[in-house]
Image (tube, rainbow, N blue to C red; front, side, top):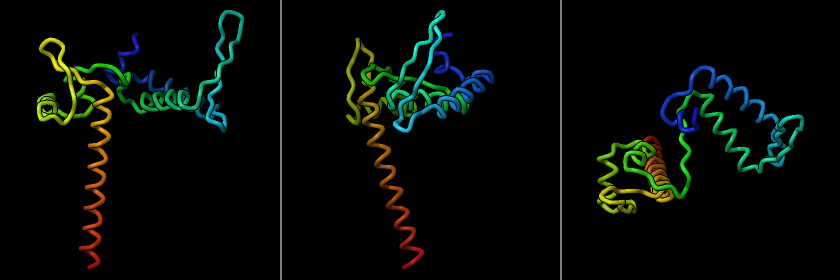
Length: 150
């Protein structure tokens, strides 16, 4: 099994159970500082390592997604994404993503005749989109409260 398999399919029941058990155990092992201590048995030797808080929390979060039966995709920040992969990550259609690119809403470059999007640009676009949505919802909520209490 390769690590990319769970990006292509939902985890099976055994993987869900293992991820849930591992997440619970690792969460209890977190130090107050956020460091995640691990012991690995190699041959007759036990090797102790301590994962930095950001890495430990990422591992636990990944296990949480698998435990909830979700597909998981890890995307390196500097990766070049195809338009289909970028559309999937934004949860939009590929034609819609292509329109965003041609309208200049997101930078891209070409590899031959194919468009490629940097993961960092996709993440920045998504953060901006999500912030705009959140602001719009806040304004709608405020309008609703004004309407209810004139």
